[in-house]
Image (cartoon, rainbow, N blue to C red):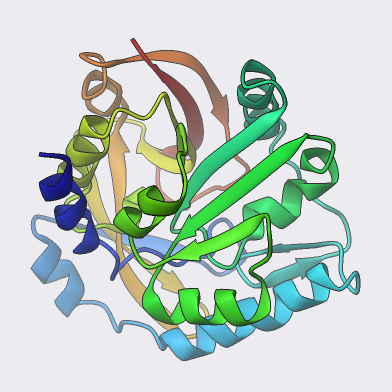
Length: 267
């Protein structure tokens, strides 16, 4: 059963595994599509090499101390912490006697790790496992992998080498074609904790499938993006997980919505 679930998860590492820009000037969401295929046809797609190269160059500056903080390939002079996210990660570590072992699903080249490494470095052990698209993993292994930061092509490869009890989805789940199918499989893997951050919820109505458009000064692209029905989203987990906390995220959209995070613990 576990092997079948892992094999299924391999198929989900194509769209949506890149940390895409939200809440920046000029980024917009539009439409209410009744199928992923229609939304794809109305999108231009993106040049993944352009995105990859921008993220790589920005994070190398952060890694080498030439910049403070990177998010979605954009450099900042000051780190914008997600304090609830950091507090949760430290809580997990405390419960594990100072050890943190997490899967960062669709975690780019380590954006969240580098954002929080000042605090995470105080822990006795960290293993930050990133599951990403193949070309991101290859760049990650070449430029960023070390004793702490590891890159994997799929969850199967990660679980063979590590024993993470936590899985993180930060600005990822909304870019998958059928997110609830993936989440069903993730639930079956019995992680102790599931964490979501920067996840969009529609203020009224059912799940809404939109197109997110990025202005050319960032990179020219448009692609499908979900806004979730919050009640449906949380109800999906209630059979196996309890909600420990919810918190707001820094992102904003031009449609009635909110970006939030939540912490789920296995019952």
